[in-house]
Structure formats: structure tokens, C-alpha cells
Length: 242
Ligand SMILES: *[C@@H]1O[C@H](CO)[C@@H](O)[C@H](O)[C@H]1NC(C)=O
Image (cartoon, rainbow, N blue to C red):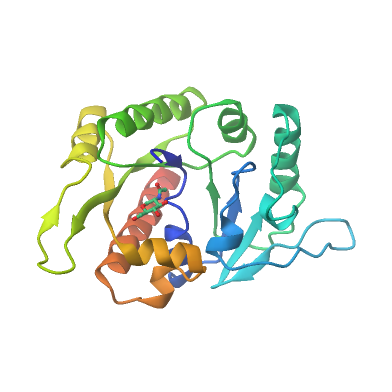
């Protein structure tokens, strides 16, 4: 939990797909790839004549993940250098075609993989996702510092699991605390690009491989994801102007 950098899970991906943009999703979590399950993809990518892998498209998003290449239940027990070469393969040796946005879903943390990835991929920006909880926000701050070190602009913060609305009485509970990400964003001079409540349907959607923005496009949650996606695109446009 905590900071999954560069993309609140699947969320923005499928949302971005409903904006008129061609979106790619690169699952950079080599040890625990979740894109195959979340995007309901279980075939292996085909290879072009010049030996590039062709991303697999679902819900209008072109996806590439380590999970497409390895057996689902086999543990991935690689050392650092192998991880790096896998990531490089997945960033360079994939035929993305023409994309407007490539979303890189990074595993939580600020280790070697994240650092090298941020340097190698020439990211336009990083989106930091955190829960409102103090310990998670400490991780988020670390993420912000890591990206600054490698000159990747921070797009902003997204608060995930921001509150839980009781399905019976509608009363909101702030399980992980209230306003944590908002305060941290203000403190660090960052924008808060959205707050996503906790919803059983999100978890279900992830496990069943049907993103909530696809199964319930008019829900409050989907709207929250849309807002994040729109804010991200606006931030990217702003940064491009500079
Ligand atoms: C966001 O919260 C949902 C539960 O509502 C969880 O399934 C998901 O993994 C979280 N995403 C991130 C990026 O922390």
C-alpha cells in the first residue's frame, strides 16, 4: 500500500481511455504484476518481424506487463540487474504504435528499480498516490524527493482510500485519517489531483478484471477517477507549455 507512483492502479488508465487519447499502460511492477488480472488479459504478446512485442489491448488501453511473459503462479525471484533488463526490454522493445500517453505503473517504494526506471524512461511527470495515513504520507514524501532528484516533475498527489461511505446509512468514515494528503500537498507546494474513496466495488473490479470505470461508468467513484485523469492531462499540458 502507500505510494504506488505514476498511477493509481488501473484507474486512470481506463479512464484515460475514455478521453479521446490513445493510452498505453506499462506495468513496471516486475515482482508483482497486477495488470494481467486487473485488465483481464491472459494471452502472451505477439512479436513483430523486427522482434518487438506487441502490447495487448483491452478496454481501449494497450498494455504490457511482466505478467504476460511469466507463469501466473510462479514466483519471480530475480536479482536487481535482471529486473532492470526486463524493464528496459519492456520500455524499448515494445511496439507501442502511436500513443498520446504512456502510463507507467510503478511498484511502491523508492528503490533501485524506481530510480533507474525514472531515469531511463524520460518521464514527463510523476503522480504520487497515497492513503491519508501518516506512514503512507512519509513514503509519498520520499517519492516526491526521489523524482525531484532525477528531475521528473511531480504532477501532484492523489489520495486513495480517502474515506469510506457506509452502504447502509451513507455516513462517511475516515478510516485512515482525514485530509492527510491535502495537508501534505499544501505543505510541499504540490497539487492535490483527486481523492478516491474506498469502495468494495473497486476491489471487486480489480479482482474480476473489469475496471469500475467500465462496469459502473456513472458511479461516484468513476467520476472521481475521471477527475483525476482530467487533472493529470491538464497538468501534463501545462508542463509541456513551459
Ligand atoms: C486504492 O484503493 C483501492 C481500494 O479502494 C485498492 O484496491 C488499490 O490497490 C489502491 N491503489 C493504490 C494505488 O494504492
